[in-house]
Length: 192
Image (cartoon, rainbow, N blue to C red; front, side, top):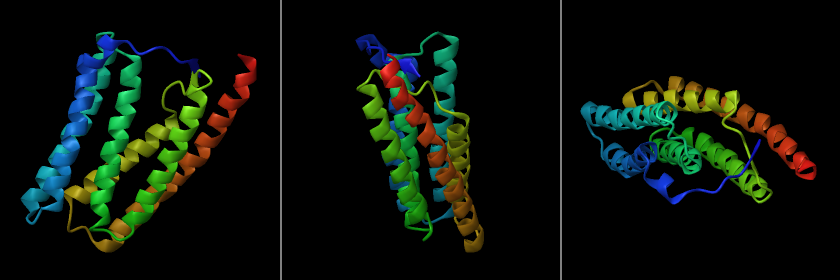
């Protein structure tokens, strides 16, 4: 946990943050291509957009660390771009895979919880000090699942259902593991 710092105006236009904006702009492009896809090449193009988004996500972190461009706004923007991308891709997949609606709803629940708890703690000058290992595992496995389902539209339904079920389990466990993290933050309010 760390105390909240003020966001500086010049942080908004740093190279890593511009990469975050680019990732957000890729979301409607992906949705338009995926939802209109008819041939395998269309799905590969949609998967390529997801891959470009994730490569950009990796690079913005590398640039920020290597060139000392880590900003408070970037710490906010990066996970927002991630969540918006994951949510948009998952929502598009709901139209193809029936079980995906359960994962999408769990994503909304988890991110809603994280947002509400984050806002409550920010009001007390506290925030999570970076992503936890289980959050990174959840994000990584979610990326693999979403990418695979977009890239391989002919995946057998039973495999798709099993992979979606596995991700539901991983995400539910991640949500459960974040609850004590926020509880500890709330308990620290009295110690400020």
